[in-house]
Length: 213
Image (tube, rainbow, N blue to C red; front, side):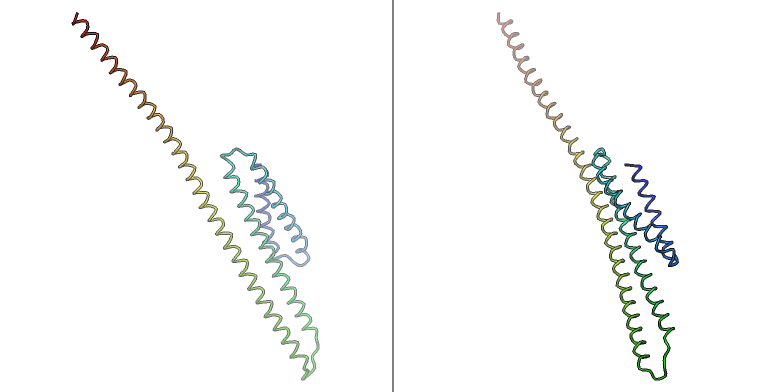
């Protein structure tokens, strides 16, 4: 399990580096980079599923920490997957803008042509729509990141609370053991006390009987 976890962490780092390269890759390079990143992301998710299965075979005292590490790798991979989708979206927008720019530059206009203003208006409207879509996508990604951060914080709080509950249960278990020992000692003391009293009474009666004779 440890070897698979280390391998998955290495893949996450490679995906992070690959995203940086994909952001500045040329059109010829981007296709192979994108396929490689998608394959690595799929491998990470598969590894996390295997790790979830292997966690069940771990000793109870290691399961909680192992589960936290696996969940963190899942969250990180999902975040990287969203980042790749954002890169794909931005590159698609740039490609569309370049095609429209080339089409506009290659179009010949005649003086006082009505088609000229129509094409310009359509291009402006399309550019505005793309800009709005990009802003909405960025806002969606930002919201997703905030949700993931909140989930991580909640996970940490729950884990801390769980550990405190376990510590409290252990303390209560120890306290119960001590109380049982005290009760057992009290019972033994009572037996010794009453036994001593009975023995003393018998001894006193024997002495009285002896002197009475």
